[in-house]
Amino acid sequence: MSITRTLVFAAASAAATAAPPVAADNNQFVVTAIAASDWLYHGTTETDDSPTLGINTEWHDRRGFYLGVQAHQAKERGARQRQRAVMGYVGYELPDAAGWRPSVALARREFLDSSKNWQFTEFSLDFAHRRGFGLRVDYSPNYYAHNTRSIAVEARYLRDFGLGWYGRAAAGRVELSNERWLDHHYAQLTLGRSVGAVNVELVGHWNNQGSSRAFGRENYSDPSVALQLGYRLW
Image 1 (cartoon, helix red, strand yellow):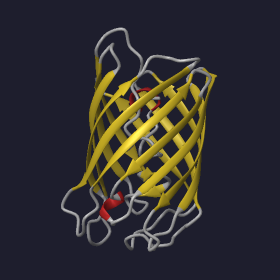
Image 2 (cartoon, rainbow, N blue to C red; image 1 turned 135 degrees about the vertical axis):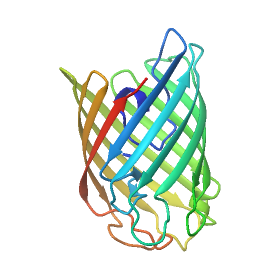
Image 3 (cartoon, rainbow, N blue to C red; image 1 turned 180 degrees about the vertical axis):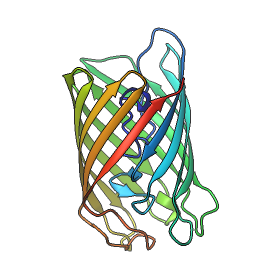
């Protein structure tokens, strides 16, 4: 599933994720502007529940290779942490096999002018089924620069309701090797509408750690609803 196809904003667990691109017969370049009431990644807010503007550029070719750059800036409350970020990613989408389309990706995330280090590298393996089922596994050797390895697993289901409407359900868990930091699990339920170049999503999200600031003194995410808007510029 692609950021450019359904704008699963990383934010809402995948816009920040290096997701496989839309299958295309020809090389394609896509630029998408994003506005969101919160920026979520692995079920955790990166912007302290603040409004965020972002942009994603992605290029992919008929052979399955793709690469992109994504950036976001959020309203800041106090010292800057993860409110300003840039991510670069590269990946390869393998041919279909029994209805599944596997892909691999490598992403690097930088948080600019932050008051502490948050940058990290992540490797991803994704399986997308033509019937809407999906599974993604992410691994980072130093998650958010907090001296801990991470493994995140997310299962999802995407349903096309027709007339541009769709729904998406996702549930995941993040395991951290350093016992100082808490593992967490999360769930998201999305209702979206796509009309031409515009895409709107309403995302209900839940994280079992809630408002805890046990990870780097930053909020996980209280149960809430996020509104996300995307506009394809190119």
